[in-house]
Image (cartoon, rainbow, N blue to C red; front, side, top):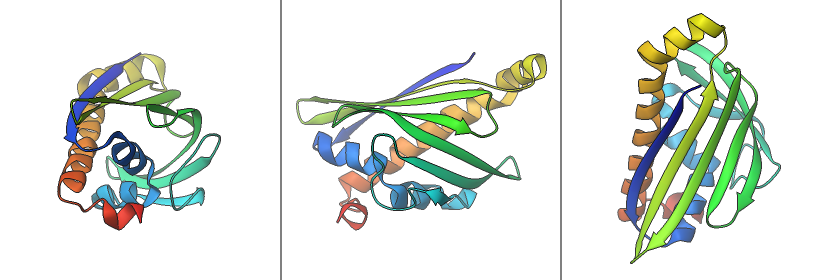
Length: 157
């Protein structure tokens, strides 16, 4: 079962980083190249505890749907989205925020299991782990750019 941990440091108040990470519109904006859009459940605003969103996006050239529910929520320090329907056998994504000396350390922990047992493990090793690591890193770099350039205002006002 792969576990991916990525970290990014952002010069911002913790509340802004936390809220931008929960913004449905910001996620769609950062994933426009994958045609990602919220299609069911919470489809706009900031997602909160016990809310569900279904995303449709294109990954590996295939249109896919992923439904997640916010299972843990401790504002502004952490939240977890857990897959309730999608391509993975199991998927948890923890978002952790820590404020130190004016900087926010954003840590993402992806803990997942691919379907198809043996073949899923091969796919993880060859392709998926790197893909998910890049996905997380690129998303957090987009959060960093948006916050440090004041683009975040477009999504949180």
